[in-house]
Image 1 (cartoon, one colour):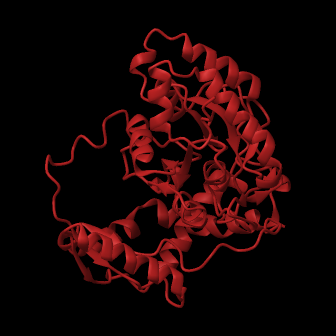
Image 2 (cartoon, one colour; image 1 turned 180 degrees about the vertical axis):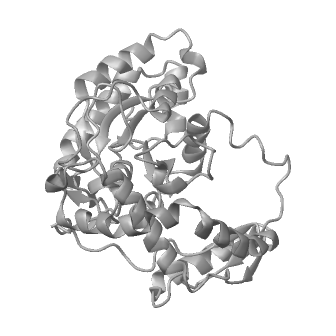
Length: 374
């Protein structure tokens, strides 16, 4: 008997299309792994065991099975993205405990492509923070369960890193895909604005938040992103590999953030691989403005203030109330978009010169698991 846990989404979908395995068999194996491991990892708020098996049978009976890019692939969805028939709690006791009427467009696209939603993954309250812990549960890093998986898409990252699903949906406003991916050793992509439908929270954190994939391989990330974007994201590449101009930067955008040696070493190693692949790599730092920390704080808190606006403050944790209160002072100024546009103008000459900016994703390892929400 072939074990489908640990196989990539590309491999699973190909096997299902060729009828080497049924979607039910694939989903059942992953549900068994979730049952065995998630008590230690804490990736899922909701596991849709019965519904997922039923939906797997429906995928197997589809007349278009042979053409489905994600045929029978189990997928986890971050608990700030609506899934029809399930509650969307966004990591909070203050959000409504009522089922969503319909799927978010990204979930609908995954299902149309043949994926099966096996569960909803933990997030910190309103997806504000960079560790995933709260009133609904705590997500741990599968590689070291004494450490946080990161946030805010920590549950989705933990689910993929632990082999409970091959791919998962996350969101990213200020690193919520990239932080957990770096912590858990995954491939993640925050798409550019407009590539994948957003439509999250009050206003997508003033246009900062995007939906994107978690995967263990570049091929899986590319496949999932193509489904989410409803187009082949690889189709716009030139027929022959192009030489890219790559800037290597070890300077933190925020003053005072010292980089740990393993992170600088990893970047230099990546640069060496890119040079061997024929790309041009130079040391170059973007012209980060001194005001960047204030601009980031303003957007981070203002976005949260919008999402908290209609919720009962008595049911929010204290740190969320403080965060939202700070953000209300900035919301008007952030809403004009002037600061973002000024930053774009400042950075445009740099990205006219370079195609890629190569940097560490993090400055240091994730903190130890603790009830940070308290």
